[in-house]
Figure (cartoon, helix red, strand yellow):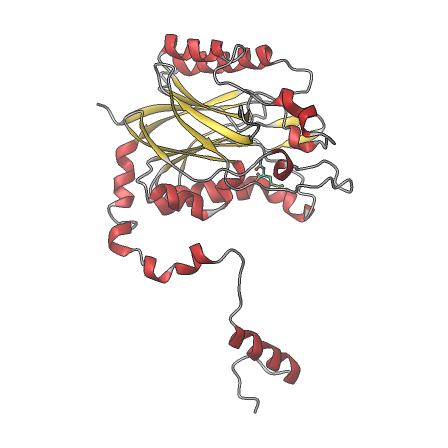
Length: 328
Ligand code: CDT
């Protein structure tokens, strides 16, 4: 079986409150068809693809937001996408808000094979933003109110390779890629909704594009995997969302890039065998990693400056000398 896939990063333009599910699914089907015409095996859609990015608004009662969530997948509105995938023989990755039958809410993504079957489901692990209403912000980022966190990163044998998923903020954390990489992941699929404006530190606004590619490219290179980062982009209900969806090679190079803020497909030939060029040499984990040195990564959450360093520092600040100097 060929290990060269054709993959489409199916960036979406904004989805507004007034847009219905059938209208959105029609746009997805159009992108899927473009993918089929371009020879794609797999088309990757963004995070929370089916709705506007609703965590930007507060509701007093969570159940007032139920209409943003899917209670079944496929459901009546999304079935046309599955049917078209099977008809065209093109698989897809789709992010959406999930409400389970026992009342749990997740920011979820699924991987669907070319026969329309769901081969994997992932629930977002790193939930950014806040859980209380913070009216001082220009808009809210209430993912910690609307969703529970998922419990892990898994990989799936699909499309002739080892495929993993992550969602948006996950891409900023090196642990995401490494936990996938340690399971042999060759292709990581990551949808995102990234507001350009970052209320806690607006100085970062101008860097959103740089930081996006920085993390996608370093994650790919340091773990010898392909990474597909796909945005919901553009001016959505008055909130500017970053575009710049990209398919990144295990070399860290960008193989395909979206250049608009709308519905757009960027396509690349993804040779899964390229991964071994990196995971078999410079990033031969089994040969070079030192897990016995990395204990803090799993035993600690925040930084802990060692007590002796803190004491040293306090003493030096008091005496006006540099830490480590003997005071003479
Ligand atoms: N959707 C998502 O995870 N967005 C975040 C915004 C962080 S600011 C609260 C991101 O990391 O892009």
